Length: 290
DNA sequence: CACGAGACCTGTTCGC
DNA sequence: TGCGAACAGGTCTCGT
Image (cartoon, helix red, strand yellow):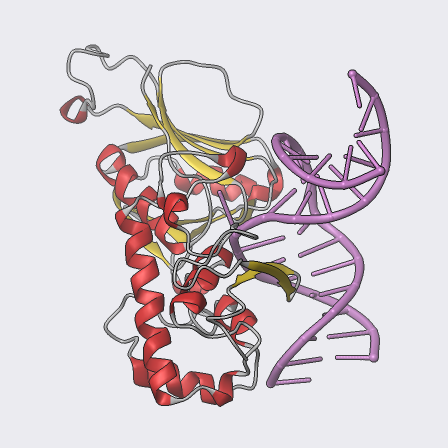
């Protein structure tokens, strides 16, 4: 039995990593059926229509928009948000469903695409795309128009449209503390708790700084820092910590996140943990002053 | 508009 | 060892 496991978690680099690993395994496969094991996982449409509409569609591409996984089908789009504990796996073979499996999509095996030659010669083995999610926060949409789900999102931080000037303008259009603002997906789409802390430290900005006080120079630094930490995260296949561990290794390169009491990589001062907007927040008290 | 608290959920780790 | 508290990568809604 082949298991294609992923870094099951939430921020942009992790979702990008998952999209890249799933793409070759899924493109060209046909959906035979869908089994929903936790009803609330399906955000839209109704479970009945979801099952009915997804059946028979062919997977054309796998990509990402912000933290949404975007699976383009022949006649519609499957959008998946992993939230806190979601994970996507391609499973081959007939193992029993696991405890946290919330949605199981049965795929027909295309003989031209056998992922492991010599295995599964007859194409009789089942292949499944499984959405597992211990905390049940994750959501899945099946829709004709991607924008019905993603229209509220701000700019993609790695796109050409996201410029230092744009960031500066958006920061000055608001009067909010930097950390919650960067986590706000309508302001910028893709950052989560880890990469926000990392970017603010790299830019030497305090998470409580008010957005309209940021200078052009600081906005430029923040812009560079955001792109830098996201690219690094992708290069390292995302971050994996605690019990939701999978393949990434960016956790071995954190500057401040989850490093309370450890030395700042820039100046050696002990990292502090505070709570901002109910989220654990990590700062170097020396590098990041108000 | 900005912000805090509470919800939604389960599992692991911490502190006594 | 046991047990409740605290905490977790996200986002939504409500009240101030």
